[in-house]
Image 1 (tube, one colour):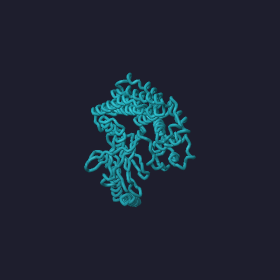
Image 2 (image 1 turned 90 degrees about the vertical axis):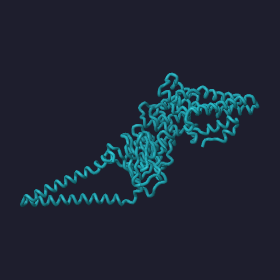
Image 3 (image 1 turned 30 degrees about the vertical axis):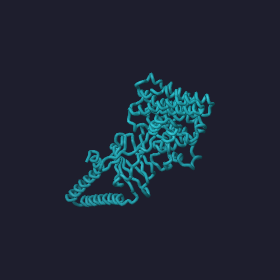
Image 4 (image 1 turned 45 degrees about the vertical axis):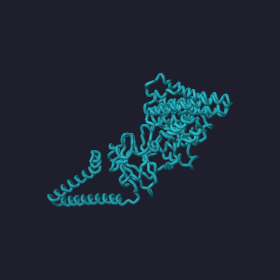
Length: 479
């Protein structure tokens, strides 16, 4: 038995033990007093003695009743405890019938919970929220690995959640976080009965039928809510109304007094609204000042805010924004610093996306301009091929995507020369593509191959080096 379990037992049974000792002491004193006095005083002691036993009987009856109720509950399908939470962390629920309660031992930060639904769900998630950073992580609980559904023990350790089992701890998988794409598709609407909500009206934001009852002031206030689900629904509301709310979002974002929580909610919404899947990008636009502000936030120490800002910048990359980003970074002057590490990754990813965007848009130009723009895209990537030297060691392998981009665009330029029946230039750029693919393979070979995020790039490279044809790109695609 570890010290934490002993402390828990003392805190649970200590008060009851103290009460029991006091009752025994009172009973003995009353009995002694009763035996030694006579008359009215003896009668009074008798009443006190009887009252003491009535109190004891009532206490035992109440404890027995509650114990019996707890033992015979039929609607508790799962119960457990999350151990060793840090001071600024808390447990939240993805399913509205999951309740949490803190023990008297607040200093232990152990959160007990039970799921009391009508039936066990297909999947079960535990959300750990960080009030200090406004980040959250959803962990999938593998029900098939749980031996006793009434005694699920989770352990938060080393910034990770583990399932405790007799054979060892199982690391739980993070399924969502504040750093990832905003997605409320699997979330149930927030109800106003949540006791930790700052404002009962926040629940209206998640209700599809309550649009006319929600004003922008309430939404902006909800970005500051203690509950991350409310903050997510507030961000989604901004996405759904991005065209009309862009001026307000800009104004709030540029305000120096805007808090971390609001910044995260606003940038998360902007990143989501910039997704090509939503087809909203052509309907709204941020000013240069607002985009530069987001570029600054991409270097925030808050990982969730930095990730969302990078997502926005990459999805909205243009020659102007890329130039502003280069000016903000000035990577040669900050070499060896944390800023250089963040700048290197952001510049490389932005350069790749800008080059691809230039290639796509070149298809609508005249023949001469088309060739020139594809070459400009190749030159852009080539000029940033050394950025990996400034990157973090665990991220450097990802910079191989620059080589992939050069190879892809060289192949596309070779295709353009083929259409123009310039076979010599076609062969030249096919060879350039092969050389870039070989460089990609050699570069990745210096690291763990499995760490590279795009395994289909490696397959395409191996295929193209043997035979430079379009089929290599068509056969091996991203899953």
